[in-house]
Amino acid sequence: DKGIVKNPLADRLIGSDLDTISIKNFDEESLRKMRQFGNVNYISATGCPLECSFCSVGRERVESKSLSRKMEELEYLISKFPQVQEDERISIQDNFFGKSVRDTRLLCEAIIARHEEDSSFYFNWDCQTRVESMTDPTLTDLMKEAGCVAVYLGVENFSEEVLDYLKKPIAKDVTKYMKRARTSIGNLLDSDIDVYMEYQTGMPMETEEHR
Image (cartoon, rainbow, N blue to C red; front, top):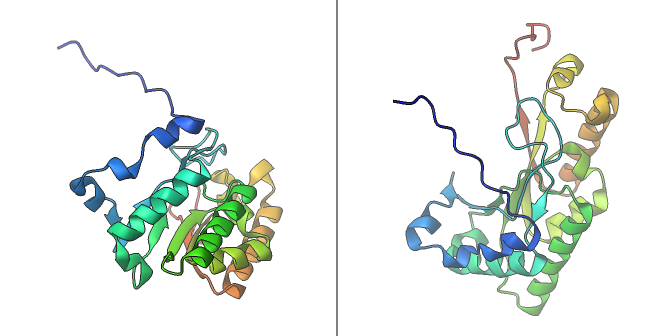
């Protein structure tokens, strides 16, 4: 009877704090809830520093689990969900997978090295990311070698006015954004990785001409 009570947000887990939460401690019910659309969801990092107008998780620095923890948990997921070696996959649901190209390379190289040690260690995976992260063809080739089968690109729109409204391009450089989108799509297709473009329509300022 005292109106709305708004609890304060908990502090974000940062750096090594993320390693203290391991999916190996999940019970069976929690593991079952990791499945979505026939795949297995996995989060290895949180946050995104950008300011897209539609996003609820932006304006925060990316915080990531350590490489050793990621590898440990991926191996655990393979043991729990062997289907990811066949017709299913692990969907990496980080807010901004690929924000650090260096970390992406290290992860792919670790997966490839682990497979070379033990051929039973392999799995199909996908991720969601921005167009800026996939502009290097050597990176998309490396991702393919590491088992990546699909990438969901948050392109959002192809209209310059709508992209500007969504605050999607970095530094409001729509021309560079569109060029990077074209480059990234081409790189992924050339690397034989399926591309899914996430798209938004229905903005208040949008017209039939935009669509």
